[in-house]
Length: 181
Image (tube, rainbow, N blue to C red; front, side):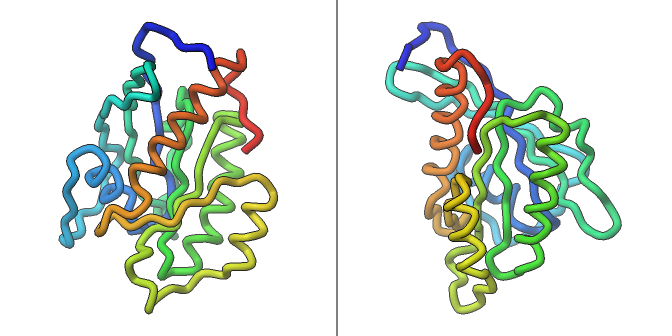
């Protein structure tokens, strides 16, 4: 891997259905906190965190975009200029998985083939789990990176953000921001 001495800055978008835990994942990653109090995101909320990958520092600019529901679609203009995104699903609500598949296609039409990771959040609620494991396995087999996360416990959160950062850096060092995702 080629190492650049300059700090890189990368825009990362959080995309998913309404109430999947996008904001909670960002807060867990950036501030190491979790709150049970739900606050809906209006528009977009921007945070940042610098991560170190080997000798390379990467400044992640995290765009926490409002969730999509039957009344409000995600504004694809928020995603322009992004280097990658995290597609977030609520493991207790199957339809958020189906929504994520549709959203991924719309995002790819807008920003092209940039690195992304599918996060199946709320893994701490396994007794309420409503996921089709065969569908998840099928996506993994087709090349999608899938990580189970819990903003509440922190499970998989660091792994998700660092994995995406690595994918974005690999794209640069390969001379492209394209990904096989």
